[in-house]
Length: 238
Length: 247
Ligand code: HEM
Ligand code: SF4
Ligand code: FES
Image (tube, rainbow over all chains, first blue to last red; front, side):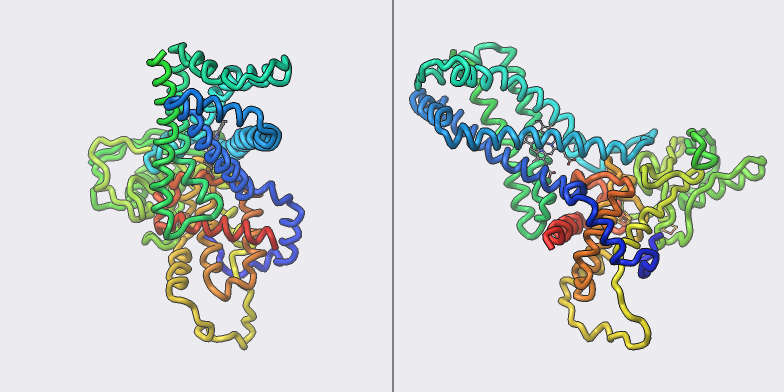
């Protein structure tokens, strides 16, 4: 089907001009690369978040101390936090941009579909992503907005011991715990495909790949399960 | 065996097209899928109806012409074969078989089940070649040593027959597996390195211009590829493209 002979129709130099005029970032590969980098940052952040939350199970003091540090340290507040917000927003906006291009690439759908040639997770990153996005909105309303208001709007006095009580209070409501569990199950599905996929997107696929895939699968199960267990622990305990 | 066929009929590129039901009787399990369609077409001609147009050429799995989305999968239910290599023994008496064209914006329907895959040719023209002076003083190919490992990988990539099943299978109608095979077959060889930067840049730009989707790494392409082109080629294309962007 393909003409593999030398392409005399387009002089190579002439073609090169065309691609130079295209902005580098507008190609699908560059976008997926950026998507993968933002996702890897979020994955790193998630582990850090879980570590601090885990402290709340073992020691009220340790959790308060860590939260107070994260909440008042200027590097965390004015460097890491904006980077995190940028990464989240970039990730889902780029997800929508790619999804739009991907949908446009098949304007007429098949009448008969058979998706058995790929995993459910890989074919439904948008669905799991949208659930995560809805959860993030809830999370913002629950923790981040009150926190910002406490510190930067109301200018309430610093209280290094308030964090544990605030956390425990949130997990008294079974509806919130239920929503939390559902969101983290979908995060697990998102990461079961996404984490190893990010390596492929940055061009990393070699003899280490089988081991990396195992690591990614373990992460995708253990980290969301950790968040779920902490929520259930506080729900049952109080 | 007797079968029910639901076949996409579309007179030309501008026609809306629709699935039409056909009954076909006494199909031999030893027939290939294309032979079954030949029999149907003979019956249609005898009835004075227009036969179903479909692509085919070598009928031995090497040219990549035969396409067809059969029951939701390119080249039918099995992996690693083309439609001409699919046999009717794979189906059961009384089965209903959906037969649709490969669907992609970059593969517009010409007629019935025939799609225009010249977008692949244009991607090839953008860089899927090496420039060699063939005016009589060509260097002997064996004069440049090639590591056996790389030669094998390059050869595996070069087995891509440009059929488009990867695009048809992909939920994003992405051409990444095809382009990665065409880039890899040169990227791994010293002869191909000379134009590697320009090749990666131009073929990717052309792929995007044609309206193929991005890669979500689902792996459906490789699962459906008649030549089992590996996903490691897509990672290589990503590397080739990203590193050539810095040059
Ligand atoms: C905020 C809501 C989110 C949305 C709407 C979203 C959406 C998406 C979409 C649509 C993709 C697939 C892109 C493609 O390959 O075509 C994707 C990939 C991915 N997402 Fe998300 N996502 C969200 C949050 C997250 C979070 C919080 C994480 C990690 C902690 C994450 C990790 C990943 C990873 C690792 C990939 C794979 C990247 C790749 O294939 O290179 N996502 N996301
Ligand atoms: S990569 Fe495989 S499925 Fe895609 S065009 Fe080549 S041979 Fe066909
Ligand atoms: S007709 Fe040539 S591969 Fe099927």
